[in-house]
Image (cartoon, rainbow, N blue to C red; front, side):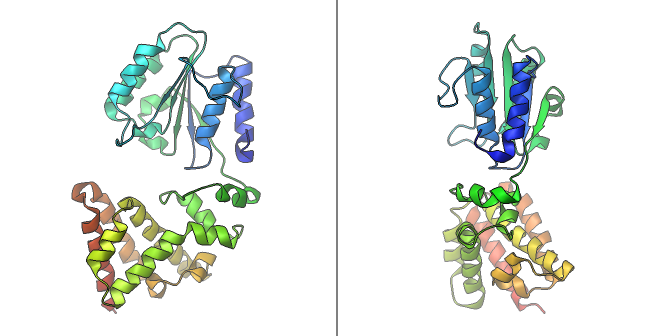
Length: 301
């Protein structure tokens, strides 16, 4: 295990395997992108007596995740597991990556297997949204909460991330940390800077709103809303505490001039827009409405 902040958890789970007390179902939960999936795979390797240098290629290891082009783990994927799980073997691991993506039918099918799993079969589920799992699945599982990186690990950790998950507030908050080097900070926050720079151009110049909306529509719209919310909350925090954060000092955008009342108004409106994302289902339309919101606020006293 090459992830220092998860080493203790890894040793704990290994010891449970060594004393033949590994639970039938383990839910590994914690913030996104902190190594939950690596931990799950290494525990699966240990349970199946595979070397950590080997990729697990065996009918005793079944991995389930969201298929390309889909947004959920579907019942057909679980039926495939049911067909394989009763093959005779001393040990078997069923690993469900991002278990919060199980749709309701898939969740109910998994629940039936969890109630009476074949001898030697163990389930490992990973999730960053444990509240999205069926309560009955949670009640039949042992919950393992992953630690976040320590301050000393943050630079090393962030440098290995190719992209920042924009709805991961833990990572965004640490990018706003005094422990993060400038080059990491600037690179990871580039989309935020680009978005607000272009938004400012739309509001205060003749830049076309439609062009702006098309440019940023390629991103996950909920992620775009989340980064605006992240900026709003950070700026509100600076106002409330009367103490500027590094994020506040380093980011020159239109929100910086807004008072708490305006920021709160934006926050409420964005939460409302976010709730209707699945109804509207058109990123350009949503971005257009966000632009109009900021245009109106820029003219208000």
